[in-house]
Structure formats: structure tokens, C-alpha cells
Image (cartoon, rainbow, N blue to C red; front, top):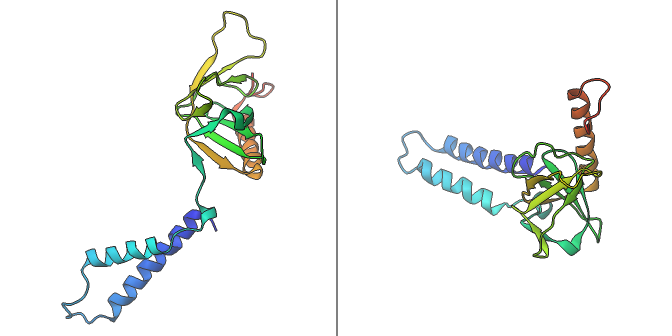
Length: 174
């Protein structure tokens, strides 16, 4: 079940229970629970029914360099880090859109700490760069674990978006 659907279901269930209790209470009964008590009950109900483990997204602030097999630029906002072991894939939504960042560029993390973290700099250069050409510089966001199916769907959506926004006869990569 989608995490948002699960949360919505729990909230609707809690609100429905509160309304059912309110309907059974006589109108002149002054011992009925206050709105604050009902709200507290709803929060307690929600907290007592946590989401399943698989409904939470796995995000990380950092990943170790030794875990990274490859880096793939999807567009000016998204970069994918592929893991060396177990086919792990981390999607990174850059802190800000990075104008000039393109799929055909070579990404460079260039850190010395042994890990790549949120707010680390990602530089990217064209493959046939001149010595005086400055790389595009971007700031990484959090790393979110995704599956291969999600990645493929994301690539299709980006390709479709690029196809609809680029003039006929040219490519999104330039």
C-alpha cells in the first residue's frame, strides 16, 4: 500500500471513530470529551498504528565512496549513484537545480573524506573539455534508496518531458 494511502486510511479511521462516538453521546451531556481530548485520541490512534517498515523511504545523509560503483546524471536536478554490492541505487535530488548539468557529462565528486554527503559538491565536465573550461558545480541533496523499476520509470518520464520541451530536430543533451 502506498504510504500516503496508509496514512490517509488511518486518519479516516480515527476520524470516523471520533464521529461515531460523538453521535452516540446525548446532546445535553456535558461529560463528553473536549475537542482537544478527541484530537489527542486521534493522534494516539495514528501513533499506535505505525506504517509498515517498507512504507518508509530509506534516506541517507552520506554514502561511502567505496560503496559507489558509478554516478549517472539524469538531468539538472537528479543524479543517480549505483552501489557496488546488491544493486543498490540512490537517487539524489540536488539542493538547487544545476543549470548546464547534462546527462553526457562526466561527474566528479573529488572529496577527501571518504564519503559523499548532502551539501557535498558535485562537479561535471564535458567529455572533450579544454584545459580552461570550468566544470558545472552543483550541491548534493539527501540520498534516497530506490529500485530499478523506479529508476527506469523516472528515466522514461524525463525522456518524455525532454521530448515535449525540445524543438524538433535537436536533442535534450545538446
